Image (cartoon, rainbow, N blue to C red; front, side):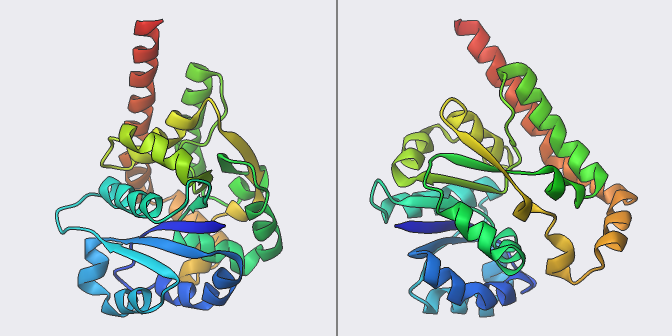
Amino acid sequence: MTSLVIPFHDPNNVETKFLKQILPILKENFDNAFVSITPKTVAMNAEAVSFLKEDSFFVVNENAPDSLIGDHFVAGYKNAVEHSKPDQILHLCTSDRLAFALLNYKDSFLSDMNQGSTPTLFMRSETAWATHPTNYRAAESMVTEVGKVLFDKTLDFTWCHLTLTASQLSNILPSITARDLVIIAQIVFLLKDVIKTKSVDWLSWEDPFIFGKDSNQYKAERESDPAELEKRMFYVLPEIKYLFEEYSKLKSIS
């Protein structure tokens, strides 16, 4: 049995149309999807909320107005654990990457979903990274490099798709404390001693497809946009700091 676990943020009704498009494929290949809806989506996108709540494939939770992004992730994870058997395989992912993969790399994506080994961290291949803006890649690669130097493991701490069992997720849930995007790095850190990795092309840059942009033009725009730097540093620098802090803790008890 396999399930999807998705924090869902779509106040402008961009991703909902893709979720509707891929729903038949999802129902053919997954048992259900646990969806944790952000407060802004609830307030601004009634269509999406109704769509999700009216279809029994989705197991929905809404988040409080004062909740943060880390809270949305954790609420979805708790929802999944509470409604799954211990050996249920959970795919932690996002709706935009999911839609992109299914509509552009369907066969290879579904094949990888059935590989069976958990926990598995799917990482961007060289082919996938080449599609991303260079500043985007450079920023997130810094976190990977810090993890490699400190812990001697090459892991994508800014991951987009991770597979594990409900039992494995339940075991680390009490240790997940971050309420911001550091939660992404924290999950991988907590699994670092047992996690397996696989590099895949289907984690190519999804934004041009989702927003209907020319890939090369949009990539060039993002590479020259100062806002891109601010966006990446917003979560990359705290994640790097987190890894240094965890390294110091390990050294202090060794």
